[in-house]
Length: 300
Image (cartoon, rainbow, N blue to C red; front, side, top):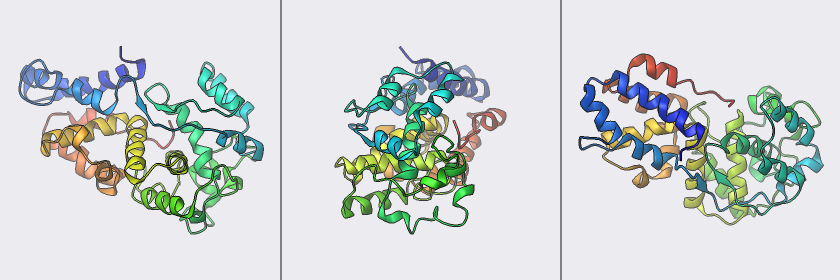
């Protein structure tokens, strides 16, 4: 059974498609799989956002404990955030309590939790490429990724940038992270993850660092990055999958992760110009619905 979050995404996107299509009832059947020859929308939904989530093959190990020891993450502050939202999920509480080999699974119900946990990993982990990072400048304390991170002992996360030996990267692994991060964008900003100017950028960089430190190669890093982006930006990536199905006749499983992580399709401006406007021009999605659905934010 679909989770509440998946049902919300499905209801919103499918309602827009059904209400605005110029194809009428036939168009609705096309997207729901009850008729026509095109890709059923529900099939696209399950391909992009699998009901059971996506297993990453990764675990946090003792990374969070190192951040806690350094003051970059104060568990009590994170608990207070969750208290305002109805309570902390047990798996998050367990990760804060001690090292964990529990596998990380990206899904609709864990995406926001993992965003919060990976954010300080990318922000604070010491890495050789951080010295030359575009994040590292006079603007450092004013970025959404730093000024927005108030869950350390110091209220501005800039104090922890590139300061914690949270995990170990060999020179080759660090070079790989930099390479992939430099061409991994997200539809809330026009910057790649190597420029972690928002929480999604920091979390993505942290995810790539964690993956590389645990032996993943370039293809695996790209796949886990796409999985994270898909669950952090579900509406945008559902529409990206629809674009490839319509215009390239490619099912989502055959779309190369590197292609849809780059600036052309994943940056805020690239996604708007090459995905959103292209779909809008098909008249399959009403303009007002597109405007409402295109409310990508740097904070969940």
